[in-house]
Every structure is written in structure tokens, then in C-alpha cells.
Length: 206
Length: 340
Ligand code: HEM
Image 1 (cartoon, rainbow over the protein chains, first blue to last red):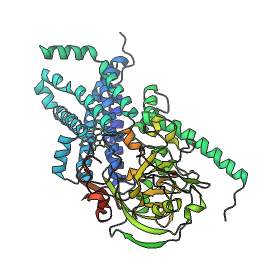
Image 2: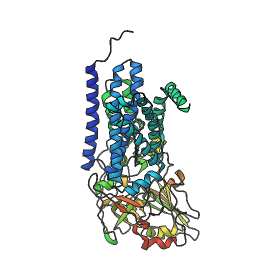
Image 3: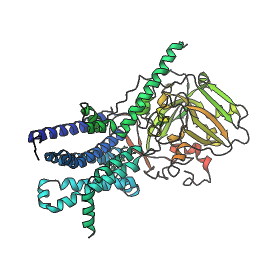
């Protein structure tokens, strides 16, 4: 196979720079607007909504990297996967923090009881813990140390994506069209890996 | 005196329709995330803008300038809570009014060309006198200002200076018959003006027209207000112009907006949120810190007054939203856990 149109290292650096700049810009500007009361009547709800949706979208983009790299035969694209995943976690941290700090005002008793009592929060919390484990173990030194186990561990991203789909679904008050569309996107991205998942689940059972 | 020519009105109506059709389409696409996702996958030259939309969650819809609100004359009343009043800007840009879109900022953007004059509000059903009020009639009762707490079922609250008159004044004029036990309320149904009523995507999947209800004794309680204004002026459309109900001891969704019909009934009338999710929203919907919403605690609330992120406070929620003295007696002997 001829590989004439491969992305060079330079292109990857440019793509990465753009992603960093965009994520940083949106995160900072939204919080700036929220703190200066330029984000509608209730900046708290607006920021929880924004960080949650952004984290979810970044997760979908993270999951889209591998199929996209395969389909376009641009192996180097894989190098942006880690940073997308880490940005997803960054927004998820901002989301959880906003809820705890600005919605609950650090009422940790209330936080604890909400995590236990409200299924949609419980599910979001588990998804968040998974993302945290994956973010920590994406440190290069840990990637090396974990070796083969790293892949198995990072397959949990699929579970996390499904949980977030459910979290979104259960969080809406009335019409579920939007979460359903997102859920379908998650399932679509997972189905592209159906063979791999089947093998993995099979081996886990044995 | 307001003079309008025919052609002027025609023009306005045409604009309204165009705008709502446009907003409608844009809004469906936006909510699906397709404006971004589509261009993301298509890789067209405009992809960047689309991708930015999708990532930023930027709301592209821009409203027209606010419709003019008229100053009202009114007297003060003794119903004034002594707490910090929410800024007018927050109270008029953070609204649940699904008829004009699902997000809190949608109504203030999508409702600005809403026509309130002419208007017609009918009081009928189990009454001796059926009454129909036109736009001007809505302001014919002695108006007073009342500063009430507003507690949303979503666990946030505001303090709002309403201008209006007791519902009891209106009902007394209509003279309920001996059969009348309940009062049913109905919001305008006009999909041409209210984009939320055009499809379930835009309307949140609840049924329209929006309907609410009270027991007759609740409706006759002196606290129950027909509001025609706030902050000294007529209501802006997103807050329920030209006339709405305000029931301060109940969750906000009971305080139905843009009323066209009030019907006295013998049986308990259906109510919109109860039809949509009966296990989450009851007929009574009295503010009650002891009875949680299935998905969040009602024990405390975030009081929105002024300022940016972190400026609000979380405060304990009071039984009947602090109006227990005036209304608790309406419910003696009732199990408020069962009749939530
Ligand atoms: C400790 C974990 C989490 C907590 C406590 C939490 C809490 C919340 C809350 C309170 C809402 C708002 C619901 C509403 O206003 O109706 C929400 C919505 C949402 N969350 Fe989370 N969440 C958590 C984890 C996550 C994670 C890990 C993600 C994605 C990566 C996520 C994505 C979303 C999305 C997409 C929404 C819907 C946005 C909206 O409609 O406002 N959440 N979450």
C-alpha cells in the first residue's frame, strides 16, 4: 500500500495545538462569563450544563479517534487520543466541582446522600471515578508499568461512556430525544468495536 | 393611546411567523447536536464554525429587542417578605416556559414578539356569571404589589415583586355555584407564536395547552394572586404576559402563565406535569422540605438574587415556602406525603 498522504509530525502538532487552544479557551471563557454574571439568570445551572455536555462530547470524540484513524489510514491520529481523553476528564472534573461547589455549596452530607439516593447522580459518579482511574493511568510511566494490563483497564472507557449516556438520559425532566441521540452515538461508536468487545467479554468470562 | 395601522400589524405577523419557523428548524438541529456534528462529519469549509458550535454549546438564537413593558400604578400591600429581591434581569432571563423553548434562557429570547393585546381570558364552568376579560379589563382591578418567594421544584428560588390582584376578587364576581370544588387553568395554545407547541422535540414532550388546577379553597386564599406585572411594570412575555397565576406556597410550575381560561369544576382537573410524570409531580405540589423529588432533595434550595457563579446561597427550604401561617390550615388532616 502506498502511503503518500500520511500526516506528518508537524500536522499532528498543529492539530494538538488547536485542540488544546480550543478546550482551554472554552473552559476559561465560560467560567469567566459565569463568574462575571454574563451567563443568563442562573450561571450555576449553565456551567453544570456546559461542562457536562462538553465532557460527554469530548468522550465521544475520544472514542471516534481509533475508527477514524483506521478508516483514513492515518495511524498518527492515534496520538491525539490521549489528550482528548484528558480534556474530557478535565471538563468532568469541572462538572463535578461546579455541582459540589456552586450547586451544593460544599454541603458534603448532602453530596453523599445525593450520590447514594439519586440514581442519575450515582451513575454519573461511577462514570466519573472510571474516568479518573483512566486519567491517572494514562501517565506515561504507568502506561509502561502496566504493559498488557493497561489495555484491559482502559477498555473501561466503554462502560464509562454507557454510564454517562444513562446519566444524561435520567437527568432530563421531560423530553428524552436529545439524550437518546447521544446514547445512539455511544452505541454506534461501541458497535464499531463489536469484535474486540466480544473477544474481551468472552475472555473475561473464562 | 396606541395607534396601529393594519399594514403595520400584517408586517409584524409575517415577521413572527418567519422567525418562529426559522428558530424552530435551527432549534431542532441545535438540540440534536447536528449543526455541529453534521459539519464535523461532512468536512465542509464551514466545518470550523459548526464544530465550534458543538463544542462550545453556543446558543445561536438571538432575540428581538424586548417588547415594551408599560409602567403600572398600584398600591403597596402587607404581603412583603423581608428578603433580598432577585434582580429583574435574572427573574426575566431565567425562566421555565416550555412553550418558548426548553432551556432557561430560551423564553427571554423566543418570546419577544409574543402578542398580548388583544387578549381574552374567560371564566366559566360552575359559575353563575361567565366572564370574559379583554386586555384592558385585566388591569381594571385595584392593583397591589406583593413581594413573594418563588420556589421552583428544581430546588432554586427567587424573591419577586409581583403586581396583581387576588384571584378571589375575580372568582367572587363570577360567583361559583355550589357544585364548584376546583378551579382549572389553561395557558394559551398558539403554535404560531409558541414554538414549543409545534413539536415534541421543542416542547419537551409535555402536552399542550398547559393546564393547572387548584382546590377552590386554595384559589380563594388571599395569598393566591393574579399577576399582571412585576417590578412595577406589565409582565414580559417570558414571565407569563399578560396575566398569570402566582401561588407562593406551591412549586413554581403551579403558577401557570399567559392564562386564557379559568374553569370552575366539580372534579379535580388534570394538571400538565402530573400527566407527564405522576410519580414526580402531584396535584398539590406544596413546597415541602420533607418530601423529596425522586431525583433531588427538596430540603434546601439555591436562592438566586444577584451576581455570578458562587454569589448565591443555599438555604433551608421552609414548609409551604414560609407561608405555613396562612395556608397550613387548608391541609389539616391530610397526609402531605401522599398528596404531594
Ligand atoms: C460525580 C459525578 C457527577 C455528578 C455529581 C453530576 C451531576 C450532574 C448534575 C447535577 C446535572 C444537571 C442535571 C440537571 O440540571 O437537570 C448533570 C447533567 C449532566 N452531566 Fe453530570 N454529573 C457527574 C458526572 C458526569 C460525567 C462524568 C459526565 C460526562 C463525562 C457528565 C455529563 C453530564 C451531562 C451530559 C449532563 C446533561 C447536561 C444537562 O442537561 O444539563 N456528568 N450532571
